[in-house]
Length: 186
Image (tube, rainbow, N blue to C red; front, side, top):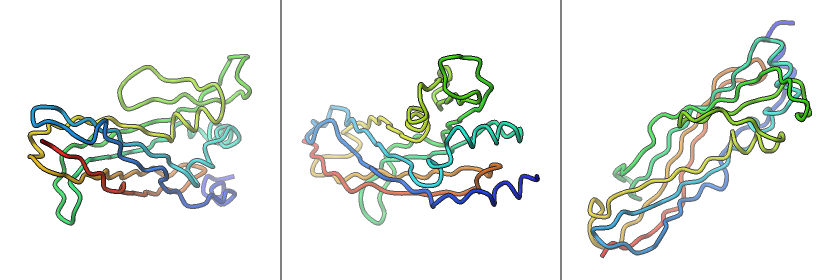
């Protein structure tokens, strides 16, 4: 069976972002301090639904052994012409499918998660753990308060993700923005 026919066997829903939140460490900062923020989100829908052992096995047999997720996230001032204050740039997270010889894992074809920070690959304990490590993201940002200036400042987080075409999934992309968060710089 050709790969083109294999994709038509699957019907995944659309992929989207949920739980998109920007959380400041504090609501008030002095001008000489560093503003610390965390941006978190979950990828749900078709991309999460397709990240399961049955699909990994079929993809492995089709020599399609790598799922690649490209992410860009940034912090900017709220408003129509919001200036970008910090960004991660382009980051790539990978799910690599492999033949496991570990008797503790429930499936023979398993995945390792390779994060964008260059650390060692992560071997998840369960399917839900694999989905979480691959599709749930938390990024930390530090911005000098002096670059924001004194007063009340509204910030928001912006996220863009994309993925390539696989033997089981068409390529796609999605994006989202957090609700504005107000902090005060004194």
